[in-house]
Image (tube, rainbow, N blue to C red; front, side, top):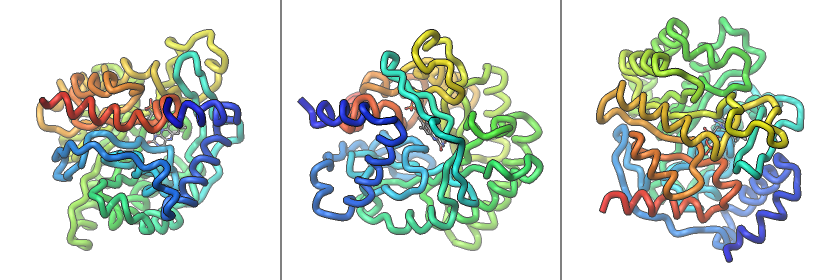
Length: 346
Ligand SMILES: Cc1cc2nc3c(=O)[nH]c(=O)nc-3n(C[C@H](O)[C@H](O)[C@H](O)COP(=O)(O)O)c2cc1C
């Protein structure tokens, strides 16, 4: 029996967001103390070079669990090869009213409409700078940027430029999140002209930042699963045209087909976990077909086992991320996924 078999019923007895906040506060408070030995897991060594970065293994934490970057070392101790924190918004904001996170245990799924609750860029950067052990051990830290809810749509690009400028000196990679379903109009940025304008301006700002800081920082774009093949092809062409370094697929889905009739299935927001696996794998396959071999793809959505992680690689991903699976399966999933991917190479 794993420790998580004992912990999970306790956490599931709480409101989902309360369980999340408690766990994260505990990890943040204890991460730099000897108590961290209690949850530290050996990291599977399976190094891989993607977008010029050396990832110690192919399993990462997806964005949104540690929105403020307050817990990189505590979460890193679970055996991840990389940790993506954020989404951070330029200014602090509270997000949507609670309740805004729901468990669908029969489907191993969650629905959330958090809406980018964030302590803001300044606090985020200060937290990221405090991370020590994970990076010292070769862990890769990705910083995920978004826009404030109050920023009008015509000023959206400015928020991303502020985010890029703020996180650039502290990031191993930057992820541009244009696919949260919980910020009005955000997903519109995935469309032709808007995407072109956004990527063009981000790319030229990045060139300036690279010169100013004398360092290269890969930039990835995170997309939704609610796209058809044609839309994926248009996005893929834009990514290549603007020399974006990689794509993360996917964010949560608006679809409820796989959970229809279950308690909470009708809550507004993005659905994550098991029902997302095939949907996001399909997007990965379309991306790989459109982008060709060698273009970095990070696969995320519905990984609850080593086998699920392998299905992302089979679909064309180079790396895999996890969020909801961690809630349902606990920290042992990280090692299970990383060792399943390691075995693929043999
Ligand atoms: C509660 C919650 C909050 C999330 N917040 C963010 C976020 O701030 N930024 C982001 O890019 N993705 C966010 N995501 C999406 C995840 O990073 C991931 O793409 C998605 O959940 C699919 O993976 P999973 O099925 O392993 O959870 C969030 C997901 C959940 C469940």
